[in-house]
Length: 147
Picture 1: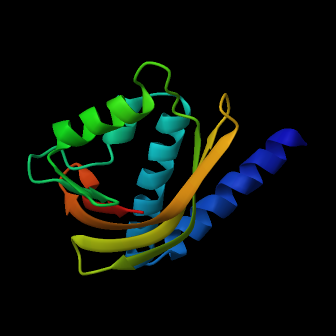
Picture 2: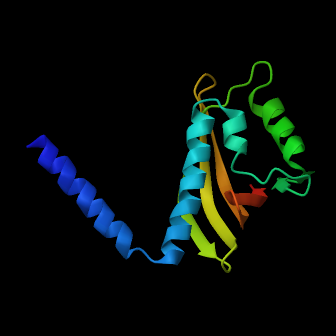
């Protein structure tokens, strides 16, 4: 009985996948990228989290009154802030995501982020706006504005 149920779910998933529009497929790919970032963050895998970003000196990251340029500089910022001595990465979540396609190779994402720091018993959160570009290897964040 269990095998029949699994076969039914797989067939239903395949049938659903055949009905999805190209635009919805791109939106799902972007959501998958963002979920991969959350999963990596929550596994304390900062390098994995950074795979969602364009690995370029032209990447831009705005947070508060600070503007950061470059993939490596952004990684260094995250390391200092969340993996430095006495720091923790906490548990991250993204929600209320709105994904807008800006053509075949551009997208705009708005959402909320929430971070729970277990040892300190603190919570942080805010809004973010992302600009993504589709590269041969897939969607990547080229600009991140987080508040």
